[in-house]
Length: 301
Image (cartoon, rainbow, N blue to C red):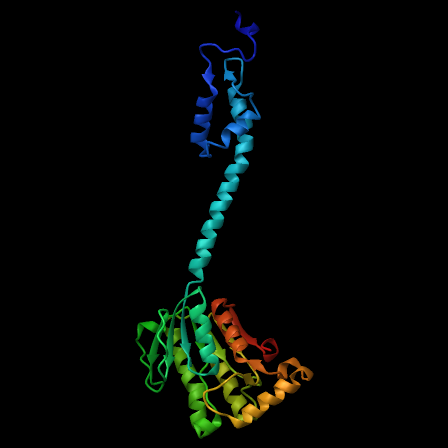
């Protein structure tokens, strides 16, 4: 029979089975075998054999028009998996925590140890801490900090160190605890490459304040901002709500008053729960924003 008069799908001895075409296509595209026959079936009837009168290149090209989106989808899924892995690795952080035995510091420590993004916590404390697989508790003398210890290098440092005038006994002693110690820690951590520093400060912090307490807090914020951290955040709570180890009669009365009348006051003067403050501190450390920032008390109610 003349080849020009042969029926379009008549087999001949030079015909190649579609399985060979599919096999070649699968090898080139890397697609799952189960998907390709369905794609080809929409282009060429089942059981068809190719001969010289059929443009098998065009047939494969038509099948590829369906296969390309599938390959693109597989590529996007692979990229998303890589991105999820990178995000997980990026959020696996080591934290340096200063002041982990106080009211806010205990909450920060608990949140950090429970957070899967935190790989480990180095806590500088003046008292012993309960053991935990992710915790390295180091009793230190803040007047004689070791300058060359490897644990100074962290992804972020959080400072909740502080005292009261009554506990300190004098203005110089108060300034040493609330200004000099946090600043000394920050300087050493910065020299070791820690890029982020988060401070638990106070409402009204101002280096030019007439009040000694607020002036010391403001001077500390100013001095920390000048150290060149990639990210520095000062959290400024008002009156802190929570159960302290020591009894503070004046603070206890103020907490009771704010609990009763807090809804009638501006948000900035309401009681700030210690857990909310701790969450703000940890979030600022785990999601550092470039530059210097302040989180006011009205965001901590």
